[in-house]
Image (cartoon, rainbow, N blue to C red):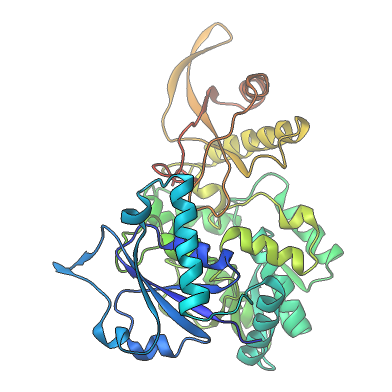
Length: 432
């Protein structure tokens, strides 16, 4: 089904995603475009009904102030010139948000004449059609981590091309405790997927030895993932496509033409130049909450759809600095304790994401009446809707005390437990 669309042109705003989400909340699809988009490119967008020229503080590129071209303004598409920071300030009050929403609604339905036909059923139908058109009778290899994003991609691909899909789960040695076994059980036994399990943990850890820069770690992990998939594909006949669970925040945070890079995502910034596959990324324009809605509409079980997010580089970006096997094991064990206690105390479905971090420095402590020099563990817990902003929830102090006692007693070489109170922004959800 053809869906109407509003193009949000980034003219230096830091709130493009807020505007795009506000339009989608009205039931109309929206997409963010770079400031230098041409009239021809805009008019070629399926179902485009209008343009929001979204200004902001990053409106100078290469020494020149950017703006919407006269060619686009004369294209016949309705244009709404908007500056979220100016109109709604950085943190708008509820009344201002209501006014912004009313003005957007008037533009979208009044000036543009758009129809509210953006919903998950239509999205799924469109993506199934697009996947079939792209893949044809060829075969697809899916990078299946077992997380929400790749699980929803798997469901979409199974619906679209069925047995043409081969799922590959790579254990890179950076997964949570018990995770590889769980992924194999759920997808191979419960979902009857064609699943190939690859234990490449030694290979990844050897590649990462001595690498402390987080961007280099992400790129090494991303590139090595692709190499593993290429090797697996060579064992199969007719594999021409690689499917990934890339979502919109991955793309936005990996850098735009007016915004600096926040961090490279393994499936955006880490792909090698000689990639042998054509990519299939059906979720790349969805925010996290929309991915979950898509999974629900596809009939995936709730415990899969609302599974806690886990980054592609896994524990590699939570074992800060150069990864060592002993620190990685301390991280894995402390994370398992945290998850066990959150589940036991009814926090599992109430907190969006929670994990531990082990930094690459030590502090003095006391163990068995003697001086010790060991690592700290940092607990991170956040609530968010779309992963673009996040707040720290209140965790009962008694729960934190029990987690602390268990970590200190059960995890070797740990002598401190800290709790991260930082929201996003200024912090990101992950430490690296």
